Length: 288
Image (tube, one colour):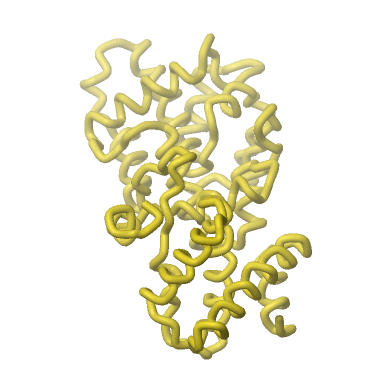
């Protein structure tokens, strides 16, 4: 591998171990191209599928092929950025992994924003009692933490009022059994609802009082779904947040923001990004 490609990956947050594994995958692909008299920089979509066929015929497991394609995609990203190719056809290849849960359809940042704003601005007359009005303030704050910070129910359960820093517009998210601690920024439109909730409800010490946070969040999402039918569940919201982050930040930054203990957890979101091309491949791809 040339030094430029290694620098490119280092700048995008890949570890030395990940780079070594990627090099093995890419060298295997280059050898296959040479054997087949295929110009790597001019490879077609169908020829790339033939490579996948050859790996399957060698007895390579589906999950391993997914990792190979991901490494090759990164190489083609580099070739595209450096001007050696005009398009990255490897990005069109999305292999379904039947052993894992299918990631639900991704919600765009605009859709997530609309979900939060629609919920936040539910008319006052729909809240028939003072108790319901206060609960709505809490629920709006919780929904904001889902659609902007991508928090899980386990993480919201551990939040304390001391973790909120409105002056700096930040929140400290404690670690859980499944996630690392991190500090995340609030969106500007979250600040006032959080301030009003804390001042009105005065939660102490935990920010949200509930016996089972997963049930509470389920109810909030179901309520939001009434006006936004594209919502499936809270898992879809977190998945969407992480996938949208991957389009803005390098993978190490996203690993930190998502609280993932392993980089592989973050990579799974990129590997299994479901687009219309993915759905077509599920019908026609030889690995189906």
